[in-house]
Length: 368
Image (cartoon, rainbow, N blue to C red; front, side, top):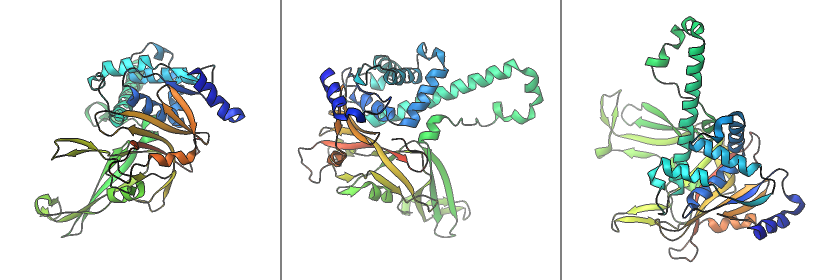
């Protein structure tokens, strides 16, 4: 990619961001699903910074064999390259991924969204295990303190496990509240659940805003779907809706482009045109104040069906948009982002459609 790399450097010229690195990732036979997500995560600057800090403060990371260590190693390799552009082979990371999850072992076309979910949850598991190990070490090394604080920590073994708030949670986790209102006694029952991303149903010629409105629209529970109201102590008709109680710092939106069609007995790709804005206002939150977000990465699925195709990513870095396609990296114009909205007609030659969108919350320190 020497020529392409120098072409990118020429295109940016003296505007090449200080200390930034733009590296393509080698494809190990159908690993584009992995490469496209890794690029989006690399340009999620708060997440990248935390990973680099983790690598720097854990000297043994280079020898450890888990996905978090492999990812921290890869991001450190990229950020410490002498050259500004080039190609890196994420070999150690991909090997570990295949070893850890048989889902990603075959050369079949994989789902980028499944991979993102798996990766974030694996990182959380590793961080929680490490924090627990550190806590156990501290407890065994200071028995006197342990007995002194006995009653306070009584729940630690027998009671519910406290969830560790890792930097993955701080970046990606939001809270949804599921509100159900009994139509007989008007009692509202609210149940909270956490999320790392929102999966949205899509419609032809729609937008992210309308998909989010549908996500939070009121649904009536009646007939076989009646709700058991604790106050009435019986099944009642009710109204239910989802609202965003706590918007995350990084809002990841997954567009449900792969739909199971009963008549066909298989999944079909929906090439619907869904407009995703560069700036997004979240208005379906519990607090009335709008949360404003800015788009910084898009994972794009290229292809007409769910079982084959290719993934690429678009990334915003220091106010420039870049296009990452495995080894290749090039600059694109901001206006080109709209060519990935989808197709207004069912059969179109354009098969490059936005699939996973990454938005950064504004007003808390900007990323780019």
